[in-house]
View 1: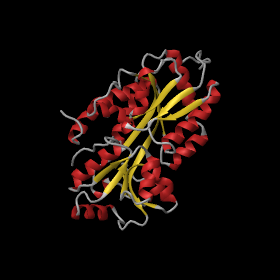
View 2: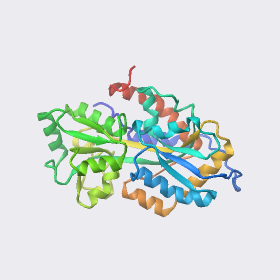
View 3: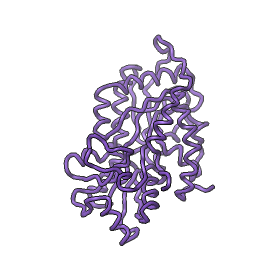
View 4: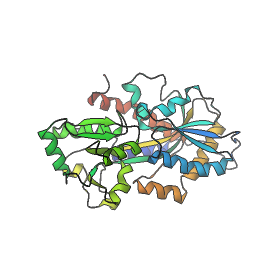
Length: 327
């Protein structure tokens, strides 16, 4: 059986072990840096999506801690990589930041860009990660994953699915599903969860293969999960099988975090990291994440950079296998 193209939880957990690395020298007292004007955070996905809501909720607490308004500015596009690219001409003074999805560690392998994910950004803080699944409308004739696979075998490329972008975890996950099952589907990329959720509900796509923006719609009966792309069943959906249980060895999860322009001063990074780390423990923030089956992804600046450096190297063979990158 081929290894999954999407980031597996066991690998995700292994990378989390970078906590053994030296952590930043965080002072015990008050951070010396304070913002002098509002802080803008560029969001890589569509307005109204789970990432957008998450960043705005974190921003409310950070605003109180740092004493300046945190403004979330949507810069969706380029498979979720446009937001961090906005930092290329930004001053490293902490007033312009971006939410970086894992797509920014994949995209440069198969698309020409004017930035380097390891050289052009300051890694500040891990934030959360998406939980993936395959979901249809409740009115879909497909009751199981096997129904979907059978339909695709009879009519290759007839059925389409929505994701948050080319080269994202959703597409990589489906490429692996196709390889394992001998099926062919048509990929329809969107700028974010709010867009592909509407596309599913309005019958523009047959199913979704992406993060749990769909969870509230499953809960209210508008959608149905065919399979979770997790290593084990989730307690919330204990009756829903995983892809692995259905003989498709694919697991997908996709973390995201906060970055700034390169060469940010250590005290600025420290102050921003501390503020967001505090905000991540707010009950209302985590209650919102729970709706979408997400958990906080605790990574300090050193741990986040270590994750990025490791993943950037190890993902290239997977992208080559998917036909997105060249050897």
